[in-house]
Image (tube, rainbow over all chains, first blue to last red):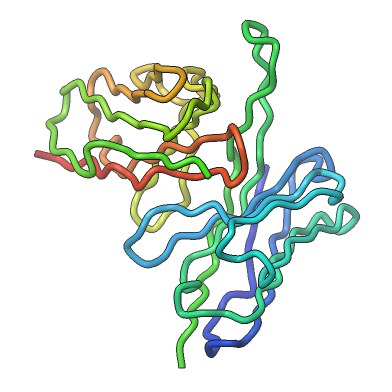
Length: 127
Length: 107
């Protein structure tokens, strides 16, 4: 069964740090880009970061650049989001997701969508 | 950065109705557009990628259309399990922004 399981969420004070992990199973982890997406309480989805299959390229939303670091271990099949200098506005459910790649014969191009998601882990930043 | 705007923000409909949700990008994203469904307390589920391609296992009553800046998600005949929040997302360029969501409620 294809599965992603997040862990590491919790309550942290403003300015603190937290390390989220995502364990992947049931697919060839090293063949996929991976992403983190978050959802603040009662709000919509926000893409946070993604990382290339090899780990060589990483991209972030502006609001977390310089504070969050995405990384992966293709031997342990795990994805990590290291979150530093946390703010109240970082409070959210954090999901890890697999970036699926789909080939279109019609357009002769690959398309990408988040096709496998974890259950989410809750991060609360509060004093 | 590309901004994604969905309309309406909420919608009430009945089982059997045909509904359409629209999504507009702030610049052309060609057909790099995904649609997701999210039910309360659950992770989102990919419905459509490349604007109109149905993800494996998704019922055929869901369809997507559009290109450039204007897109639509249509549900041809609403079923009880379809009531949820729907999000569009552009996969053209980083950051891969989502729309603000459309909550579909039972009338």
